[in-house]
Length: 543
Ligand SMILES: [Zn+2]
Image (cartoon, rainbow, N blue to C red; front, side, top):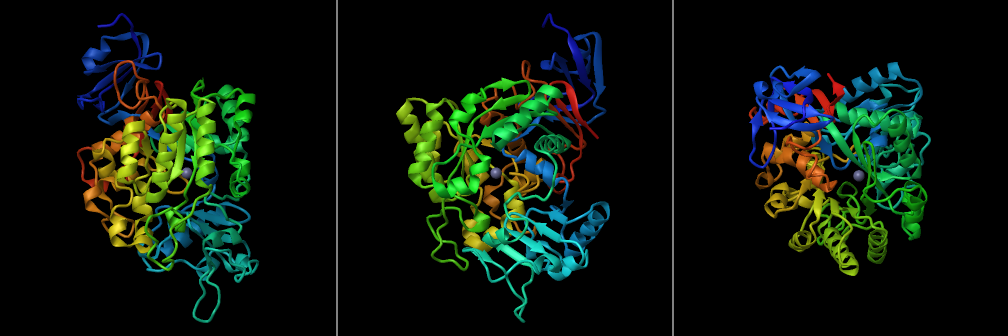
């Protein structure tokens, strides 16, 4: 069999290897952080070397280590300081959790959710300043999600409600009094402006460590962090050097745009190719658990702000709005060419059907210029893929980083924005897999909650937080969803040879959970508990 001996034996579990044949086993033998063998308890015990550690799985389910292919790690760390509202389903619950948080903190009371929406809240309406006043009137109280911030009266008094930016909305009650709700671009009028804004004072290093621990707690053995600047690159390196990253992290430097608008909007979050050269960061560079690449770029925007670039207009309120882009097409092409020229592959944020066509074409043009892409490129989000995009993806080997949690968290709003028919085709995972595309799983946290079990549930049910099924035909199976969060995400990192399934020679990254999600009723999946997260044979999280 092998002349090596194992220094770690995991036994007594139900191991889903997710190899091509779908093999199951009860035990795994590990040597120096790598899988030595997979089989029965007896077979693995025979491989144990002197002093080998043994972990009894006690009937638990063992999966390949999950990887979130799109998570803003330091923002997750910062949001972990706020009241957790992602799964709150009533205004009463939101208020209760904020009151609880207020007792444990000083200063502003801030809560974070995925999408506060009237159909997902028991009261059938959005919270207002009056609701938040019941938490406190002498401290700022604010809750925020992807497209809105709601403030209490104390904060409201500091904002001029008639100073609305284009695309922003700040609804009023029938008597003309502002409700304290600031939608879309109007979020910028509040102290919690950006999509992942935070009021937390913790350092970047501390935020990254907390974000990675948060990811490990929910079962992730690896992440792809899609916007790092020089400061966060330095922080990642310092953590890896001084204490080791809690889990594996691949980081995507966001390339600086030459266009003034994008420079103003994203400038501090971006780097130049020269910056990367200066700090010795090259594509695929590995430093322990830290890996560099691909380069992050962005094109069209967000459906939750009605700015994803579409062929047909948004149906509600804005019949002439087809969405918008952060950079012009020529600048997108220039950035792709610049990245390829410096040896980096790219991952590009693109959302609407018209947007994904333009982005896929630009990548193909870029590849034609250099003869071959420097590595696997991927499209991020892709709410609305097209036949043209699928054809290009096939020719160029493009993968998609999808976020099944969007279907659940945003489904009700998407339906209101683009109508029932288009909402049913939102993030069509069935179609993507049937077209042979590699799909990685993730949640774009803190945009939505980075709970992969909620994501797998959403992919398999397409049930919104309002309880509606959105496009039954686009459901995928739990096993397919699990493969997105493992092998699919590993392929986006170009690490599918060493990660993503439990096979001999791959890294000993495992997610151990309390229930058999491949056998139980789908409704029980979101409450899955992670018992252990194991990275390279070491425990990164234990319940
Ligand atoms: Zn993102």
